[in-house]
Structure formats: structure tokens, C-alpha cells
Image (tube, rainbow, N blue to C red; front, side):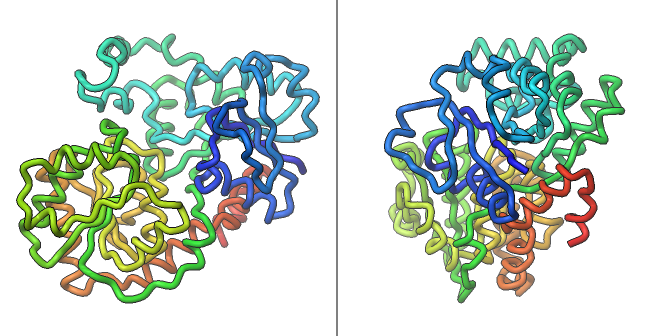
Length: 391
């Protein structure tokens, strides 16, 4: 069977994220697989070890001939369940191919659940768009969501990344009278790269680590991350913090006015090659993820495979990754005091020897290996997902 994965925003760094890892996992499970994306400057001189199809113009994607010429039987389609992709899904289905939607979100795609746009402070980002989303959600007319629902109806299945996200999506469908579509939806987590699956957990130190694109201040919650970490370090004198990722200047601006004693216990590394991030995760005890929204939180998943525990905001994906306290704590709200309490709670759990990092690592490696994830996708394609879930 031949599978194509469509992700229009694909860039080289996505090879280490779920799009690339799903492709590798499918190939390792005996599939022929390639990736389809739009041509962009970031892909110049990029030659992955899987076939890459670059589409010069977006208009080609709306052509029946484009999809007919592909020798693929099934398209894994990254759509975020956004209605703007429904016309393309319709064309793919008309070409006779199966479509498996990759939702890559928290399942909150409309009323009665708050979308991530509604979790954005009104004055952050585009004010006009934020106001529009507020009005649209409050009017909650079914016509606003008809194209989203049609996309699920057209598809041969929808993959979503956490159990709570699946519940959200199913609630949305039940609310709008489409209970019949619930059977199309499946929970499948995102995979991590082999270096995290194969890493060896050793001695842990009193380190909190945060990894992210900190220039994306709204979704990654950069200000709250810095303020919470500094308060935590004031309280826990025996801890230090490591902040990894791009947006170093964004982090530093929120550290202005922080005492020298606290700053001396904070290491800001800037961006690091993906393969080297595990060297920072392996000695750390706590991975801190204060995001406003995440579809899965792959950085947190990688940390768990390195034997860290997780402290984060009450997101669907982080509730899954914390596994009801087995491997972390999610805050009771997005307020700084609640997030700080979750971080302190994690440090106390380590002090009380609640955690065994090797067990955390082994548990999550078994779930997040790309071969295991690809097998679950294979069984969904075959129509028997229970086979993969029993393993």
C-alpha cells in the first residue's frame, strides 16, 4: 500500500516532529510513503531520506488531475480540522483515494468549547481577528461549522492526539447533531525520534527545564514561563533552571529586574540542534510547559522519554502526558499561582521519592516509538484499530 502525507507548511525541522516521524514509521512498517508539501525557500537544498513532492502552486491542490496522477492509495492530510481545507479533501475523495485527517489540535474546533483563539488575550496578536472569533463563538450558528463537519463526513477517519481532545471533538459533533461521525475519530499520540527512544536515563539533578520557541509569546506563554520560574527559584533555593530554544531576547526582557542570585541559577542556551536537546533533558528532573495551547506537546513527550516529570498548564495533551500524576502535574488553571503550585508540587514529589525516572522513561518509550504509532495508523487504515491498541 502506498501512503502520502500532506502537510502544506512542512519545513526541514518537521522531519524531527510528527510529520517526518510518521513517514519514517510507516516505511519501517512496510509501507511505501512520501510527503507532499508546498514549495518554499526553506526546502532549497533539503533532501530527506524519504520521497518529497513539492507543489509549486497551491492551486494545483484543487485539481482533480493532481491527485489522480499520484499512485497513493491513502492521503494522511494535516488539516487541523479547519474548514479552509475542506474543498481540497473533497477533490481528493473525488479522485478515488482514501483520506485520513490528521487533526493536530485539542479538539476544541467550535462552540460549545472555547477554541485556542478565544484563549488569546484580546490585545495580543490581531485585535480584529480576536474580536471576530469572540463574536462568531457567541453567535454559535451551525452554519459556521458546516464545512468543518463536512470535512469529517468526507474523510475515512480522523486522528487526534490526546484522549481529552478526542472527547472534545466528539462533544462538538454530538452538540451539532452528528453523533454518527463519532465512530470515525481515533486517538493516536505523536511519535518521538529514535534518539529519545534509545536514550539511557542516569542520575537526576535539581533542574527544571523549559524548551520552546519563546518568540511565540502568546502560545508558548513566555512571560508566565519566566515569571513562574523565577518565583519557583526564589522558593526552591536548591534548584536551577535551563531555558532552551529560540527567542532568547524575548526571555531576557522578562528577566529584567530579577535579582542576580536568581539569574545566576538560570541558563538560557538559545536554540540547539534537535539531537542535542536530550543532553539537557537527561540530567533534569522537571520539564516545565506553561503553554496556552498545544496539540500534543512533543517537547514534553521527549522529556518524559528522558525520565523527566512534567509540570504544565491544564491542556488536554498535558493531562494525557502527566497520566493522572504518574508522570507529572497539570495546574488547576492558567493563572500564575496555579502553575507555580504545580511546579512546586512536582519538586515535592521528587523529594518524596515518588518518581522513578527509569519507569517514566520506559512507560513513554513504549507508547511513543514511531514504529508503534505507525502500527496504530496501519490498523486504522485496515479497519481494525483494536489490534494495535492491544499491543
